[in-house]
Length: 438
Image 1 (cartoon, helix red, strand yellow):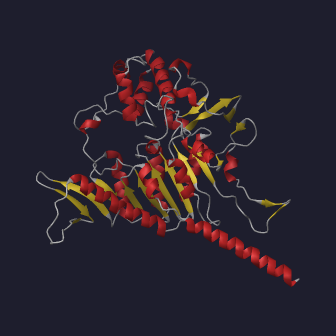
Image 2: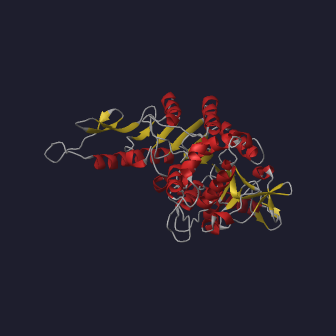
Image 3: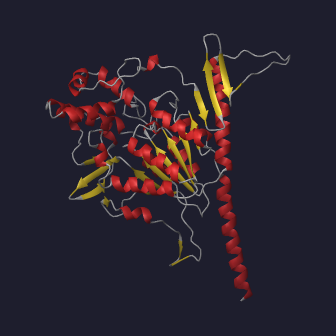
């Protein structure tokens, strides 16, 4: 449905025991918190009439207070982040002239293709692809991914579709080539989530995005990324790299106690990356040319690039390397005890991923889930399963929030850093005392 026809989302926070939503009638608008109508009174005890904007601001404030407190008070040994398209929307620069800032949704990319006939005859492409997916109002659903799925299926009947599909692939590469400069959202989040106790496992970030915003943010602040690639030149993929970690050495021997280096996380790119290529039978990583977002489409290379573009065989591709390794690691991470999974900007449209999450919640009773996405809505088909999870028990929390706002309200657990400092100091003092007794 076109964006100007969309109503404002009435849902803010949803779990089995905690619900924040706005309800409208023809005559009134109410903010409901756990089923009770929220109200404010003046100094004389009279109820203050609040408009929708004021109620929405209060709803966001209450929601943020709730999830920030929950994240601060509950500690999980294993933290897994799943980053979808929404974690890149509006972040970074997508071209040198800053005409369009940040990543875009599939709907906004659709609109751009529809508006600019110099790229291709988009309306004709839709007709040839046989795409007719419509919403309950009879409007065409702007889902570029599903459109490409249809086009791949029908390209056997119409050879001209092949060339159009290639143009759209180049268009996607151009729009997904994002420069993180000017945005500190990813970096701020990395700084917060990696402040963990030494005994805890490393943070694992899984993403279906092609862009390199996580990598660029990490490089700004000197983070170490374990991403499945070795450290030779060129960097080649080896899944065993995910089993490695890094410790600090003193002189020529390892310390008596492991001292893991700080500012390190695992990164798994489930649908590939713009800087991955296949060469001579190997999967290698090259430095991404950020100028791809200013090049003509004819200059952009798609050959040998390792990205799972939307197609009729996308799910089959996900069972090839390196994608199979990434999905296997994701399943393993969600089966681990005492794990918190936070999904960011993932709308549960990818069935092969949402089914893994659903199965893990079913069989791993120590797994908790927090879903962060501004489009969370109980009436939408893709969200109904997530709402069903939330109604089962208190392990699932849905929050209608943008990534940038979630990061701002994510608690900064400096106490973990202090605990590790205290532990290390205590061990060092004990060692010195033992030496003095000898």
